[in-house]
Length: 121
Image (cartoon, rainbow, N blue to C red):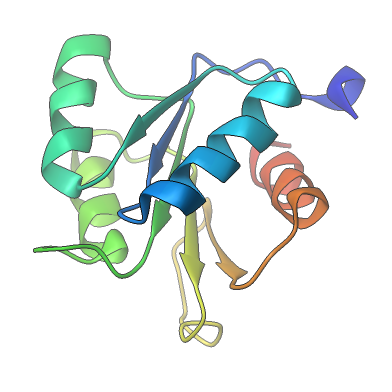
């Protein structure tokens, strides 16, 4: 699967559940992606300030203090073409802008990688 992987600066993963964050980081790095992980929107913003915008923002919807969608919209107000993947068990019917996708929870590694490929194609 890594042969079809798009070239990205890095994926910024925002997930407040440490065990799930670690698992997703493992899946992505094992598939050849460079990943920066944050446990909150505030921590993710600090990473963006240090490293610049990622190639893809992958975020949980339910974060402390700010939803994943709100954080994504904040990022896209400064970088409108930023691809965004939002993990959610309850937003499947949300109408999102182009370049933004929902990945329903729970999901597998294969589902995550497929959604990333579609998002960045």
